[in-house]
Length: 365
Image (tube, rainbow, N blue to C red; front, side, top):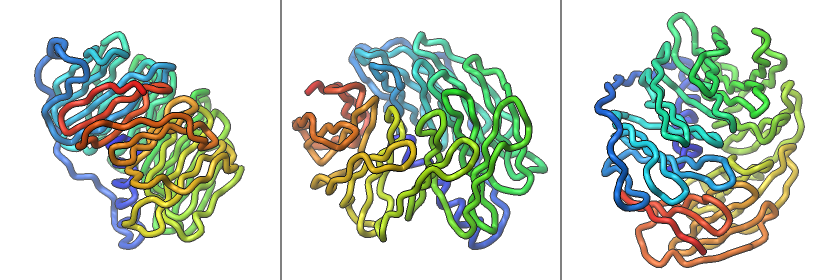
C-alpha cells in the first residue's frame, strides 16, 4: 500500500475510538532494534526485500525514485531501479514519506526514524516517544507526531539534516497527523471528545496562528495542497483551508464514501469515491488547492488505486493502466501484460513501477 491510504485509515480508526469511547489514546507497540549495515547493491533493478508489510513512496523530483519500506528495512532506488540505499531494520508497522531528494522510514509505535537522501547518506534518529505519523516536505523537512509523557502528543519538526528545529506539545487534543508545507508552515490534525480541529503554526512562534474547528466530525488526514492551502480529507467531505485556518472551499461527497486519495500532485488533489463503504470506486475527481473541481469522471471500470506525480494521475484497473492530466482527460493507456500487480506507482509521464508481492519492474508506455 502507498503511504497515503494505509496510515490514514489507521488514524481514522484511532479517532473513532477516541470520540465514541472517550478513552485515552495510547499506541502500545514494542520497538524492535535495528540490525546490520546496508547490503550490497542488488543485481537486478527493483529487487525488493522478501519481507511483508510493504509501503511505498515516490520522491517528488521531476523523475521520481521509488522508496520501499517493509518489515525488514528501507530501500531507495535510483531512476534506473538500482539500489541507492538498503538499510536493514526491524519494523512492525512500517511507514514512509518522501520529498524531492530525501525520504524517511519509521515504525508506527516505535521510537526510531531512518533518514536517507538520494546520494545514499543514511541517518537514524531516536524520537522522544513512539511515532504516530510523519510527513516530509519537498526540501526534506519532516513533521513527526509522537507520544509524550504528560501530554496528548508532541509534534517535532526536523530539518533536512535531522536536527530538531521546532516542538509543539498538545495538552488537550490527540494529534493524528502533522504536515509541513514547502515554505515551512506547520499544520496539525487534532481530535478530542468534541470532534476534530486543525491548528496552524509558523516555526517562528509557539502559539497557533489559526485554528479550524469541526465539532462532531472526523477527518482522516491533512496535506498541504500548496504553500497557502491545506486539504483536510474525511470520509464524507473534504475541506480546504488557508494557512491561517480560515475556509477556502469544501467538497461534499453527496452520500458517497472515500475509497482512496492522493496528494502528491503538483498543485492538485485527487479523490476516488465509492457508492458504498465496501464497494468499488464509482467517481474520480481532481481538485484545486482551493477545492474547485478540476476534473470529475466516472471511475474507470476495475479501478484499484491511483498514483499521482507532477501534473498526472495514473489509475490501475486490473491489468490495464490509464494516465490522466489534472483535468482527468485521458492521455495514455497501457496493458500491464500479466496478473498479480498490487500497485502501479507513477514515476514520470509514461513511466511507472509495477509492484508485485516481492518484486517490482519498471514499465514505459
